[in-house]
Length: 119
Image (cartoon, rainbow, N blue to C red; front, side, top):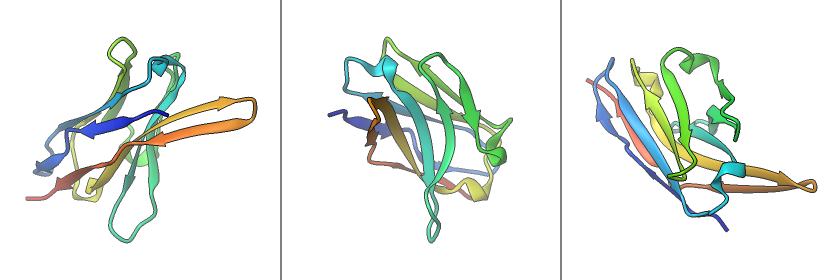
């Protein structure tokens, strides 16, 4: 079992920045693919960004060039740096840890942190 704690959300004006953090309890953090998802009111949860154990990253088109995902395996933490925030980025952001072993998927979620972009 892996526990994830998401922090760093808040209220920010359009064009502002926030950095989200997700701290994991597992001692084998480095094997997990880490991701950030978000869910806006009335919408389905969507993938925002992922980072593999090797540091390869992937982003949804709407955040490319504005958001950066990174990880610190020694601190067992993944980050999401969000710049040039827009009102449409408003959502609850969730951290995810994913590992595949012998065709079994192990997936864990943080509790979520609210990001509100508004003037």
